[in-house]
Length: 312
Image: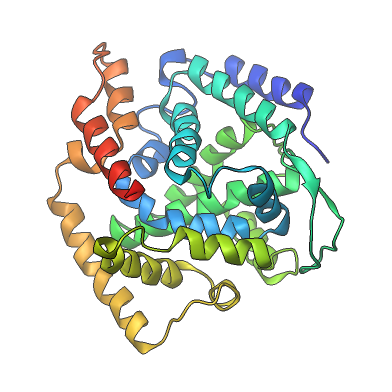
């Protein structure tokens, strides 16, 4: 089934009726979603989430045929997360506006798969607003954010995980996904995620493999050590099936690097001031709710500096 504009608008009306304070957006202070998603360290799972998404042939071919990832990776990153942060940390008006823009963009993204891969055959049609493809992308974001947060920041209780997943449905509504499509509980979500990975719906084809090499290749000699570490950390987060299909080396040396990195990341996270470890969008949201509309200039400067480094 394809999510239509009418489907999206129905969910947006529901969110507008449900929200008490439009300034807080779909979440706000006290939600597990803000606690988890404010952490900049979760971006260490970005490579894993991206590859998990690309392991769905519909997503891989859509990105390959319609995206500017190869020609303008930093620009695409900024545009994508600009919308994500508007939905998660923005006020309700900004969240709704981003939801409509993303849906309209997805409406234009359609085409045909150009290979036989997994359950799919050359010529099969895809659409970016297909609800199963949207569900898969949503699931990769939920799973990766939770795993990196618990790995580096702190373990969550079963109730907190359940709350995070329940809150994530509000984010899914911004893409027009129905409750009938979304797994009901966190336990159901975990089962859906594991079953989907094990199925032939998830299979790495040529475009996904090419994108993996592009995304994890160091842009310069100076960044090779850092890029190699990111590659190892990404491999450590991936399930064995996809680690193998994406052609990652993950032997004793790589396993040791991953294992030794985790306590170092935990220690560095504990010592980092909140102003530096939280996303600027979260700091801006807190200021907005406190009646201080001044943007987080320090955070934005650090964000731009990091992106310039990636571009090089």
